[in-house]
Image (cartoon, rainbow, N blue to C red; front, side, top):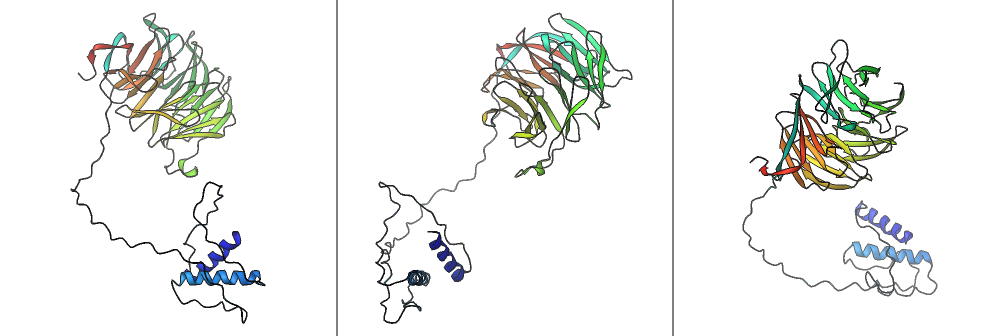
Length: 425
């Protein structure tokens, strides 16, 4: 078969100066299936050599390409040898007149509009706290503690259960905290400041345990590992620094640009937007504004990616899935193997996500809307915040939702919607 295909391609190349003709296919038929009926090949003449047979094949190909040209005996046929007749061609198909075109009314092209999220009952407010200064970030920690990074330079920790502030920390010189990250123990909280310093606080004594200054300008997200031994810090140079218990750097991960990845059509990742340790602390997930979530192992090697059409601004994890929030206003739920499980509309670019232990999902956007849904994306309730959201999360013991705005307002909401009130109505 390979020899026959080679001869055919050589003839096509010499005749048409091109190999754009056909693709050979080897079909292994069973006794019950046939692709087409094969005509019986004439028996070879006595004494014919393989060279005579290939010459005859070339002659048939030439007659086929000449489309009805008079048959001629092969030039290499020996004198007195009867030429072999070509295989009988199939009968030509009957000529059918084309059917007249059906007159159809002209239709204008229609474009699908994005489906906005359906209205949902408003959640009931349970508690309200007001910080003495505006805030840039909120984080929910162990024992339902709420930490706030305030613009007056203070890191404040609230206890909703006690109804009061339980700790206040700040650096000398008034460097403002920008981002927060809780360790698995309620005594330790990390804050990132304007000058790039990352401080690990002892909330009982309100003094720093470590003041870390990784190389470069570090104003990206930070995250503790689940066991509290590692602290990951993302910078604006697409590098993630992983620090050990004593503050020493144990790993530097260079996040590739989009153009460096094979087959990626995106531009370079300008900034890293979110990072979280996976359950078990064997992988680190890093999201960027190039629309890619990347998984790195303990050696810093990239293992898996999740691609989005626009920037990924928020990231949340569960034992069985990954949840992402994008600038296109959509929430996506993924399996750890990379399969898209669910996708639903939020209505505006996502800034914050949180997943509860029972599967509830909270999503907050820059328009001040926070929506609560189940794990399949079915809307349960919503709240309209009086300002830009700077964080949200779930309280474990109280089974409630906590939100915070840039004005320093912290509100606690019931997970059960108020049927007497609806969003926007």
